[in-house]
Amino acid sequence: MAFINENYLKLKAGYLFPEIARRVKAFTEAHPDGAARLIRCGIGDVTEPLPQACRDAMHSAVDEQGARETFKGYGPEQGYDFLREAIAKNDYQDRGLNVTADEIFVSDGSKCDTGNILDIFGPGNRIAITDPVYPVYVDTNVMIGNTGEADASGAYDGLVYLKCTAENGFVPAIPDEPVDLIYLCYPNNPTGATATRDQLTAWVAYARQNHAILLYDAAYEAFIQDPDVPRSIYEIEGARDCAIEFRSFSKNGGFTGVRCAFIVIPKELKGRKKDGTEQPIHPLWSRRHSTKFNGASYIVQRGAAAVYSPEGKAQVQALIEHYMGNAALLVKACQDAGLAVYGGVNAPYVWVRCPAGISSWQMFDKMLQEANVVITPGAGFGSAGEGYFRISAFNSRANVEEVCRRIAAL
Ligand code: MLT
Image (tube, rainbow, N blue to C red; front, side):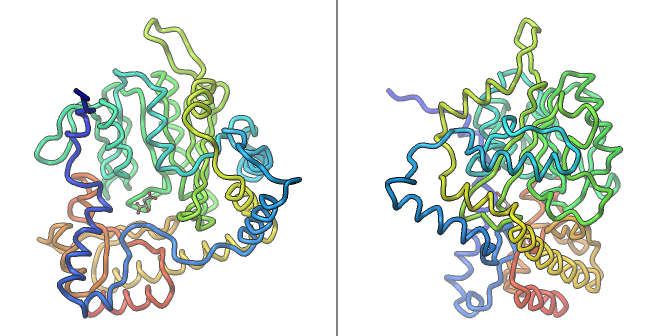
């Protein structure tokens, strides 16, 4: 008899985006005309071609793989030094932050990293997640057995939900019960909110006082326009003692299909054994990574490193400006339609209040059927997302302009 991991049976319905895809497929099969007009602003998937600098670097890397003298087989599991050093220098040291290349672990994506990180934390941790939240944090905790069953609202027993509302600017208050692992994502997916330096300082102080660890997802850092908004948790004094940072090339370099990301684990960061003694986290993750992962491909890492070349930087900046221009148009179209709108200023997501009396899945259906536009229903991100929907700004300008016209016509 082969026994299964029964935690999987606790998971609710499908993962959000496959569920959306299922509904869209049903609609397009039933309505070929609507299918032809369909514009997808649901999943935050990039649409614009890869930066030329990244393509050139990957072409050269392919050629290297074609010659005996330069061919490479298995690479270092943690990532090639050329990429780890480029990340440490450009994303951290040049901004005055103390992060070294050997604290960086290159991977094939932040979704995998935020899920896999649970491997090195034991059972019994009290897990705090924001609500609404990127669903991967919740589902991976369910899968590993950190929760009980879900209730009728979809909330899992054993998780501490930190409510993010328009009133608190979608940045949660410090909980009044102790928690051990806290997921924070800023710029936020799905609300597009950012956290201020003071708010992050309060979280770092809480984590240090309570020997908790912040799992800080900064995948959308490149979209920050406001110079006062922190780009990294390590801008906050003391964060090296209490935070792991997740970053990605998916949204800045357009690598959603190429796959490359990294996490930062400072050497000072420690967890605890059951007997209370401290244990550095860095060697645990290094061990995990080298046992279960064989490294992102050499070709992809060469492409990622090109993001930091002078041409790469300029080309990434152009992509960011393109998507943030889209976000500004979407914000304005929703405001002109009389809707309350959040985000879209330092993040590629626009978070919109549904018209009174319409639930977020009803809004999803209305947008799909009447405007032939795919959005993401807020309820898919947690119960506090009910009453909202998310529009992704990742699209061509022509499509976004058309979406704006359709919102006006609704
Ligand atoms: C989203 O739409 O929330 C993101 O694309 C999901 C992801 O990056 O995995």
